[in-house]
Image (cartoon, rainbow, N blue to C red; front, side, top):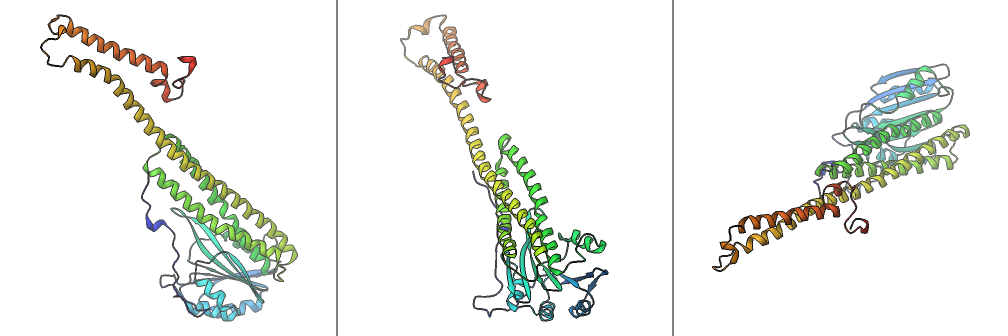
Length: 374
């Protein structure tokens, strides 16, 4: 059994720039929202949080504070992106990757800064991801998100505001770790909800599968593939931070990245386990449908078998030959009905003892051919 899959639900990647375009070209999606720029500058003595309009407003904050976090929600303004690229001396190839939001999670070292790309996950009607582009320098962290709205960084912002933990007394590298850790931890609630949905889907497959069940299984398979594509390269990116001796991350900060790396392993293990479960659910669904079809065919076969000898008796006495002895007998008609009734009852009893009726539906009777019940 197959089900129609809406093409709009299948993720597609379309490059906006034609092949052969000059490397480093920044091509803005016309549908991308205009950027919303927020800045958090902090140090051991305090913090400042504000929303700005022009990128040049960040320059004064960089001079006054040890660490500056600039977050841009929306990629719909080429000038804003280029101004930040000039201010922080970002490579144009990295800026090109910022606006082409189909990048694989990765880490790239550009001497004075580190470029980190990951996929932020969130739950809408289905599991979706958006690209997070992060530039990490000695004194700054610059993050680009595809669209305004909620992200997974609220706990980090609260810690900066309250001065909780070590976040204000450490540098930009520790802030970057906190953001990456929040991004990775945001996968766990989504996967837990997904696991609950799989349990419900499993019950549906076992108890009452319908035509829509196979569509739900296909959707679950696509969501898991999306998660796998996001978390698998993210694990390698975090591992490269642990492996490479980048001056931005101190030895103490790299220790914290070990915990972040362990979390990616746990998420990946859960995703792989759920992928196997979804594959098994498809097999169970097909087996369930086949079993239901076999039950229907068995009922129809039993009914046909019961009425076949009765039809034979009725056809014999329905012939129009002149010389048939029983035609003139007074008890011929009741006898024919009695014979058909006896055949009917005898077959019912025989089929019941064989387990082909009644208890066979729930497995309480032994299968046909069991020598203990012959």
